[in-house]
Length: 240
View 1: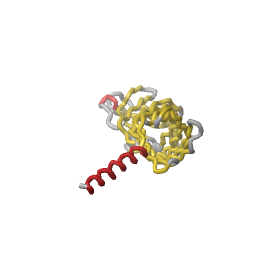
View 2 (view 1 turned 60 degrees about the vertical axis):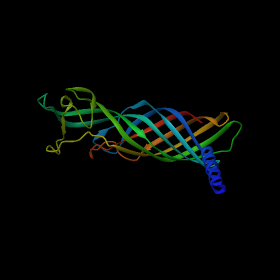
View 3 (view 1 turned 30 degrees about the vertical axis):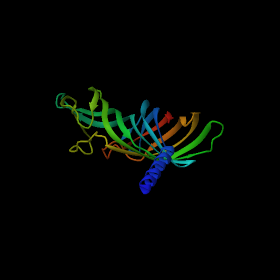
View 4 (view 1 turned 90 degrees about the vertical axis):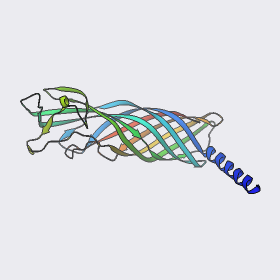
């Protein structure tokens, strides 16, 4: 009986210590997103304002160091323009030749970053921190507005378009090849950021940070149209 009581006491102590180390919270994150490319066959104009939101989780293995993660939904928008191509639509002959086709992507991801957070000791009611880590994003919705001189399609489900939205893109150099405008399911990026935590009362913290998310993988599947999607976000949340 004494052993059982001791085991229960140790278990309860461990749960209390763990709960003191783990903090949960909610956040909202307005962000600016844009595309970049190394491919000479496309251009990537424009940047866009989007929004993210979700759950924050911080595990403090030391007073000044934590492993941080999130389960959040983020929207990424970016554009690519592909010049000097031919576009063929089965319901709109004849083919459009030597034109520029424009894609305005609107992609929604579930983000699960893994971040090392390094923070200062408390200065007044504030702590300051720096973040560095890896962002893992998984596509849940991919839409695009597609336009040429001959048509303008809105909200095309890009990886699985409806019949009325289907078309083919070919080039002079490879007239037998149909180019794909699909987007990738997985996006990886590294994140760096700086921020502050303000102790409102007890263990409740208001958190604000500025974060740069640099993509490491292409969101376009077409090898000739390699493009990456980046973001700068303002993260505002509350940890309990």
